[in-house]
Length: 310
Image 1 (cartoon, rainbow, N blue to C red):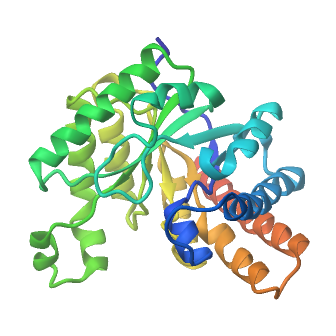
Image 2 (cartoon, one colour; image 1 turned 135 degrees about the horizontal axis):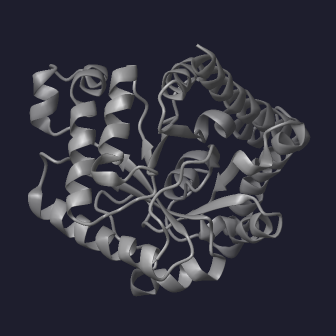
């Protein structure tokens, strides 16, 4: 059994988007032909090339990582392993409101086929929401957690989304930004505790962007309660604009226990859209993805350095 937690710097470029990538980037629905699958895979290769370019440009290799799916990124996962990059692969079905395994009862075989550094799940869970739904999800997540800690070689990365219930939106008159600021942080901490109590034990929690330092501190306190001293958090980009992502990174970087970030769409979406519209070359798209990713790494590292020096 591996020791719980991971507390080394971790700068993830995530591009494990599947359903949203297929429909929003390409405008395709339904089952994909082999040709269309290959086209999406080729587009994800552009992102991976940007990641590698950023490492060559100065992102410390031991801190850099990718998150990509098996469906469109199997070759990328194998190459990342061959080059000793930190890698993560999702286990959840794409675009589902309720967490379930992408490959059903075969989930362990698919994890073992790649042995990524991290097995990642994205889960929508509101502790004040549907109790039966929460119990079903927690049971599946406990099964994955126990497998990873007892039998697997990958660590457990948990992307937590806490969508508002109607009652929560009513409290803030439908203002989702007010929900994010005033209500979501409390619900996130409660969710972490509920899942821990259900024996779901991530090594790293992926946390939606938080505007206040004290809320980041609450997330770390929840993640590390009860002797979970090496469990850490990373901050998400949520597809927000550059300025908002910079703010979130700068805030999280000042909090011990936040070890990095996972910023995907803000890094690659614009360059890929321009590439598909033939407004820029492939090389230019690779260079711009690398520039954005490197910039986010520098923002996080600089903010953390200033905090340590203070």
